[in-house]
Length: 184
Image (cartoon, rainbow, N blue to C red; front, side, top):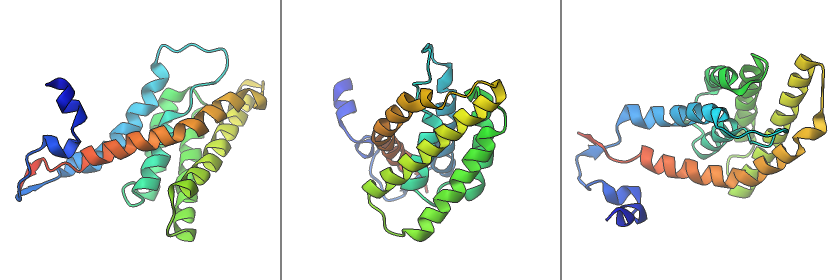
């Protein structure tokens, strides 16, 4: 019984009726909530001597922004970056600035390349994640007085390899977000 529910798609679990629509608060709030919960992943009990855990919240932001360009407004980098600053351990303000710059860069990419495939999205995400992790390491190095830019190479490689998985998870959340739960 449980296995059958896991095999079905999210659309098969909800009754199909004409007078149903997605619940607006859920449809709008799920991207924000998933990014904010991914920011709290740094509280996991993973202990490492070098930075190897990818920035999951930043990757979720990129995936949501690339999958649904109109879902997150351009100013979303400010509050989400603030939330990430509270949990990431980076110097305060770095997330606010870098996430806001990322949203501006994504807006420029959307204007330049109207029709993109997954390969182009992955390439853009690779560039943005590499720049983000490099700038985060530089800002943390300035704050501590101990810059080590080569230490983040494993973190960059894991982030670049994990991006398609994050995109797949965001696609699943997007399908769940659009389930017809509200009765019209």
